[in-house]
Image 1: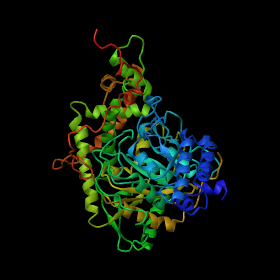
Image 2: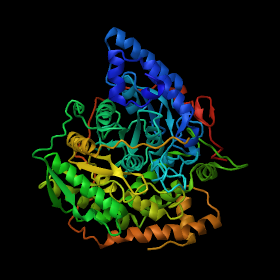
Image 3: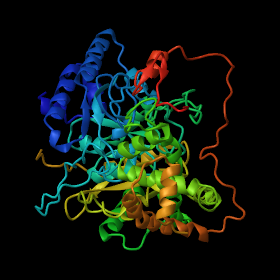
Image 4: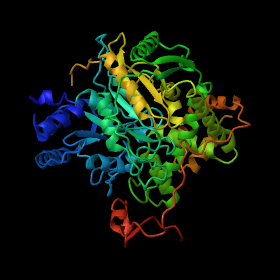
Length: 495
Length: 95
């Protein structure tokens, strides 16, 4: 196989090809390393780690000989730069982490290495995962490989916060990558670039060693080109971890083996509150198409109501900044990261100067909102009220599960927008998460799969939300859509 | 509720972020725009609702009270902007 053919392969195809000797893991790793090196224009990778990928590939080739291959042996992946990687710079795309080089490995990345995967490099993201377009990174925008077919060549947002992961997978720089999802950061970028991504149930993947944004919402998950690859990689990432107090002490199901696109007997709920005002006709048409796909797979479709949907986004923008303001208090210029010590400054001045110099504007904005809503006199009116609304949102889902097994909705209210288009108005940017935030607030598994293209030739995603712990149901519905959508479109290479 | 420049400066001070008067002033409309929008939560009747504490039911685990980690002083200090004599070093706090 040529190097280009090898870099067109996904996780399952690489795993199988290495196993049956069609090619070596080293050839695969080298192919992707070369593609990464030639795609600087996308700004997807912050750090390249070819040695890590090659070492894992050599181990996979040796494991083949000894008959000791694991679920991701020989698969080189990209690592969102929010996961601490021992000996490799970890920045969260912020200057405040300076040249932080972790002396430990995050549980999720350690699990992936134990499953035989190798690392091609660390992927760009919105600063501290705060953003929906990858424009808040301190290291420049990630560019989507996709372009509108109107010939304008306007650089498009890959979505966020896992924008580097999305862009790299869509451009075939890696077959898969890790993402994290706090309010939609796996699903929305997956939708924008025409790939798949799943946020598992809160607690499936350990948060230990992942730079924290909003701890009650943060969940890691895989991003890949198809549903099966997501199932394989999620199986490698997930698992109980005593080092995370919210980790679920449950066995990890074999989601890959359990995949089935036969949805006979399944009830698909269509949440009527997701039909928001001003939704583009193309998104609506895609949703109808998705409903038809699932019916064709044997499912019964029912309309359900999630009455508190409109309050999910404002509740999220209290809870997430509140938790962020607390979590990010650790960046003080004392233990790691940047220190800004003005001449003659004392300790308090050092804290304030360090944080002013190190955090980007969006991060500051969220810390400020979080600090305000948690401050004396406002705590109950904002934070407690938001946590009560969160209970109501979660109860909405519980009630929906009485009449359906999974929910189908669009992933995002639009296709990818151009870089700069929404940057001036933080609120307009926040509204991009309108369909993804409710499942995050309820801790539910949710996935985006490509559904089709819009009039400009840009990918659109469909979102499947499942009951807690029912990743299998979500993946299976995703597979049913994938088989019927026949999404093969890819961005023409211009970089 | 809305904020003014003085409130923004107070929040910035609580958050330990140095902010010039001009920056604080620029942030006033931004924050008010966002705060005005999240205000709509007030219209939800939550008088009979408990605030959420855990998204997925889970119990806090207990483990034996034994040392399971540690003895990694140099690793802990490896990324410190300044470390001296095996400690983090900061500007003088007490005169």
